[in-house]
Amino acid sequence: MLVIISLVAVGCDSQYAMRRDHAPLVTPMVSAPLPPPAMPLPSALPAPVSQDAKMEWFREAKYGLFIHWGLYCIPAGEWQGRAVPGIGEWIMNREQIPVAEYSQLTNQFNPVQFDAEAWVQMAQDAGMKYIVITSKHHDGFAMYHSLVSPYNIYDATPFHRDPIRELAEACARHGLKFGFYYSQAQDWHEPGGAGNTWDFGPDDVKEKSGAYDEGRAAGKGIALKLWAGVSDVVRHAAHDDGRARPAVCGHRAFAATGVFD
Image (cartoon, rainbow, N blue to C red):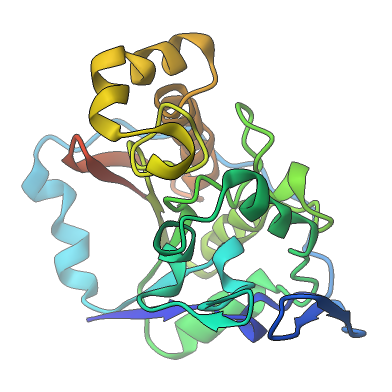
């Protein structure tokens, strides 16, 4: 069984409350204790000999937690005072919000009450065996300290912390496996990424033009962000026993990367 949590406005623990017109109302928040000093994460072990062996632990675990968390939890399904149908993490797409406008949410994203230790302890107390979190959803915003794009929680927000690393370390301390959802081809922030047709034109034109490959070569598009980004995530994923193995699933138009200890 997989428990899915989508964090909304309160779940973001932002220091900002939002009026219906999305003007921020600053409210005092008590910060969670700072995380313990970063622990070294060991390198990955070799991949298992077969897919069946790779999934053995998953079949045995049965019960885990999937967390959706990102910039989209600030509007929480509303934009400019109007409810937007559909799931909250798709609000940029549903409303066709320009990149220049949507990216301003980074100025408000400051989850000062985030406590990785408390989150992992809650999951463990509930009997969960693993946690999966959105490290980068389709909006292109990385919830970890990316080395290839400044559009991430560490560099672009007042929070200036890496919650993915903190969660990886907390999971290591508690013996829980830790995995990631990572959106690949679908990236609405990048000109070469799929899905953003209101800023960057039709997807089939991008494909024919080679924008995807050019973005990879230039270090600006989704392809390079994908592979270098996954490398970043993998180094966060290794735990005490050193097992960190990426697995890519999906098709060309939409794919997600799962990385598990």
